[in-house]
Length: 279
Length: 260
Image 1 (cartoon, rainbow over the protein chains, first blue to last red):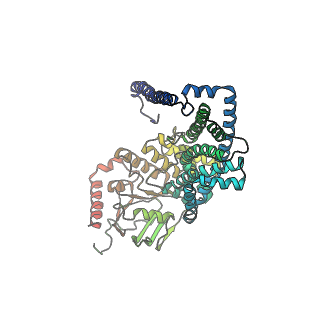
Image 2: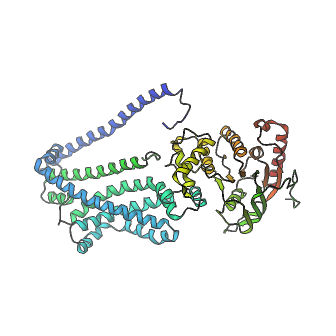
Image 3: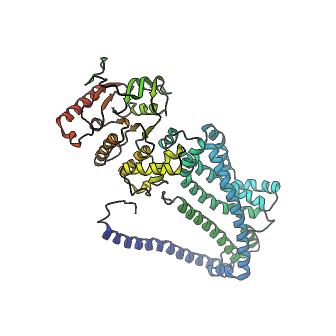
């Protein structure tokens, strides 16, 4: 795909290669599927053990969880909670993106600014956010705003560090190329540093997106007011020993995390995939 | 090291060309105390192509960085008679997210030229370096030689009077390198710019230049100057002539002497 000229003799060999590639893809796809089936098998085995001990709600059978998930009223509850959690996660993520990128851009402007501000990004990463959560509740109430703040705190760091890393990844000669034309900071930032940083920004974004789901669910478990999200649902089901429903809610929360991760990975490939091999 | 005056194969000023770039007693000491250059006197005039040969780390590149204003000389002065300067780096330094057209337009864009005029000059520069048809290719789709052509085109788009080359072909294979040497000679004759070319290949220096300067190891000093008598446009086969071999031998000898 990347060869430019002299491709005349390659055609027959390439055909063979495509066939073996698709075969290999099939093989590589079959492995996770096999692992999944094995996992379900183990799940059944463990469920049987718990059922025999008279504690079926601890580890309910997979098909019971599936039934709980597809039950219309349960599904209604789950989807409403999913919607609320998604709203919290995406609001928090949006704020984390804006805040994180701005923070990194400011730091990239001068070494002394970076030295002054980067330690706080690290501190933010080191604070056990869970320790802050009750305080956030006291200060901001126990609803949407508090949930969003927790989400921002949890998902901010990867945005800051990956954006800064990206902005600083510009080669010295490229920077000098701009300097020689008398480019100012703004031009340097918008035409060189920011485009160059996009691949790492998207790596950070993908990580932050996954963390924003964690933040939304954690925030929920502490703040029970406002529109209940998946975290609230999980708490309720756990306290009532509704095993199958609890597992269903956990699976939905996990799927949200995966979906968000895949979505932003795809978005990254869409934006920079043309010129960068975005893994 | 001898303290005698620089051995010149021809008088230093055969015909005094209008000076575009002049170094006068330039010395450069880095903040850590390393003396990179000392007592550098060198001029590059219109119609001249001057090569500086020396081993890596002798301060050759610093010469270009001072000439272009990327760095300030510690003492001495640099005179520039033009602000139309092209700078070709060792790497192609193309922006990977821009296609060839976009990369070649970049410098004019930074200079604030209009969309139409820079598209026009970029097309012309792309044609000059033989990349017509590759305007929409991204750097990663090009070979190393083609990337360097694009890099040359980027500088040509500004129509420079003085070209600074920092070992531009050092990373290329021998065949590509020799082809680009021929292209550069053709462009030198057609476009009549002046050139200051840094290299560690003596044969490349002699083949391309009207004048070859030998630089010593740190601190870098210019220890010998050789006028290259072969006419322009230059016959590629000149490289296989005894006169060429003799001159290459002399320059190599001076280079060796400067580092013993």
